[in-house]
Length: 400
Image 1 (tube, rainbow, N blue to C red):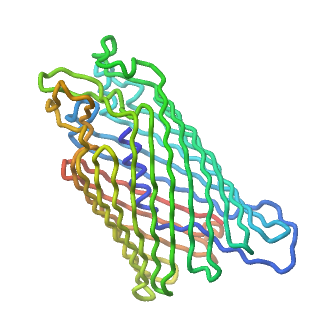
Image 2: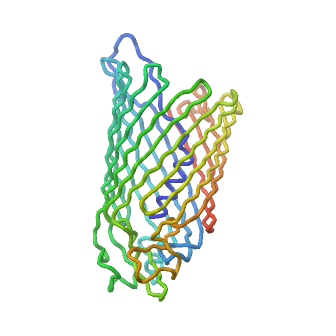
Image 3: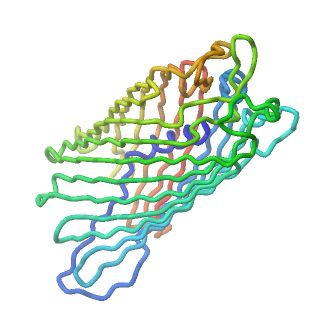
């Protein structure tokens, strides 16, 4: 659903630069260590959006939505007899949202089940680092559920660092096995417009991703990374409660191909302009076989105010071509094999600008609470040239 995509994209944008890697000091003599808490991270955000191109009502109508998300992460670690590092990352996320557009699946109800819902997504990841041979192996599982779908995920990764620690290569494979509960618009439940799915059917969707990253330290002031995250999906990829209105005013449920192939390629570069100013930049090109091509450019200058605090001004520009399956309200032909009026698949450009404040104090702690190692507060404003706009405010606390 669009709400999940937008929320996830905003959160990823706000925190893509935040690093959580910690370097352990290797003791010359081994002491038996128990699994200990390395750090605890708490992230909470409030997101709101509005617009006039709801896919639920055929590309017109309200897109008003609010989402309150909370994420709680515990990172555990220990060393073995060979001074290798073992880590366990346990993460639990909860989203609570209300969506006026989803409530129009059945306008006769005051508040349907889809109007307000909760999504829960726990995950667990284990990592093993061989310090002497400079590699890390990690694996994890995840789960996600809300009113119309459940998802089970698994991932496996490998990271190798050069002897001088200036070059790092990582590969990560992920698979997600989803089950959709088909929800059709109220007026076509007794007369489905295609044979793809009936109301309340359960349909599968499987997603595979392969991520590759090559990071290089050029010098003490300049670092770059090349990355890609190739994706393939199969199964029910259409959102069946999205309406599509045709030229003759007839209405059908959204229909899209049952496969999709995605190729994004990006480069990230961080440059320390001075002791107080860091410039983080990112560019990504994206292509998929639904004929969407996109470009993303982001800049985030960070200014060190004091030894313990910094201010950042993130900005992102995004533009994409429209899918060959998209058309606006009452513009589709009856002969079209596939059809959607979801403006996420249309031609558009967007801008996002924000402001972030980061505070850290490992000695006294934040608010003189020793365990609170850092605090980050960020705000982002997002706007599209088709009228959609959103606001997000995020608070992150790190405990050690």
